[in-house]
Amino acid sequence: MLLLLSLCGLGCNHESQLYGLVPVEGIVYYDGKPLDGAVVNFIPNHPDQRSAVGTTDATGKFVLMTLNPNDGAAPGEYQVTVSKMSGTGWEVSMTEQQSAKSKDDIKPLLPVKYSIPAKSGLTAIVPVQGVKDLKFELKK
Image 1 (cartoon, rainbow, N blue to C red):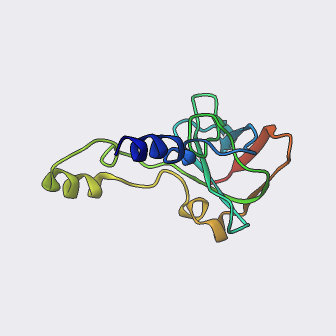
Image 2 (tube, one colour):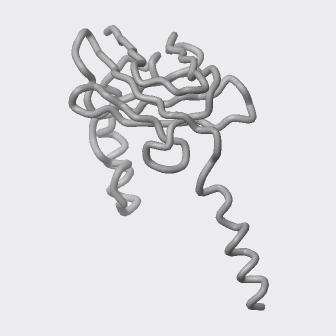
Image 3 (spheres, rainbow, N blue to C red):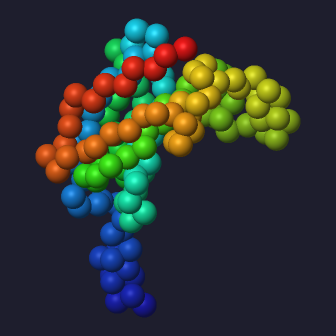
């Protein structure tokens, strides 16, 4: 039994780190101003890659993560979505009654097209050395 637990300890945590990820950073503007609190999602064009996600700060800057904070993304081509919602209903644990009420309070703060990969019009190429100057300009 101890041997099984030891082996699992060596192999069961293999997904906590992916190799080959590179740093990816950028800025999102909405109507010419930095966009704060938006979720930026990189959806890979290659089916064997994982998505990466980041959240913009007050300056519009985001840093992508795949599994761990700031671990970046795999090199490749991506479709990009950006979304920002009003309310905090999905950020905190709630009872079903509170959750149902909060769903009505959650509204998109950006045009919906930016949250749909095929319609966003946003793409990115992540080179093998990473990228720190991506820029996305969203319009109303």
